[in-house]
Length: 123
Image (tube, rainbow, N blue to C red; front, side):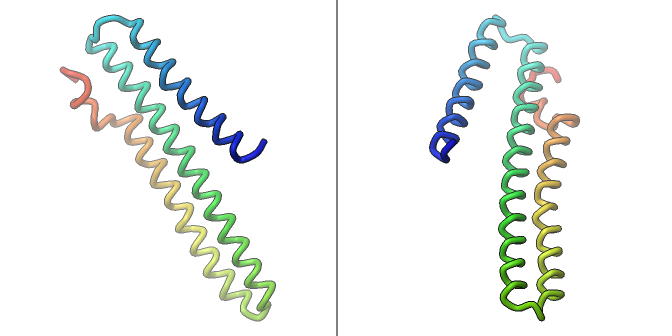
């Protein structure tokens, strides 16, 4: 699958999810606090899931580029390998911490629901 086909497939799935959820929520009828709460829960779960997917993908790309660059530098200058390796490990830890921060925010959105009082009346 080429890069263009992958991007098109991702766009198609996103559009299907957006319009499919609107059709499903339209069938529920009038908005009650219970339906607003369940809608908020579904949206928060989808948001957290997409955030983790994007953060994990970005962290993986960043880590792979850092490792490739470090290995190329070690290949050009083997005497500097210990210094390059220490710098690479520190960089990898900082890149991974960004994904962990996104996980923390997603868990806060899942379990603490800090925005529910703005979305669901009487919550």
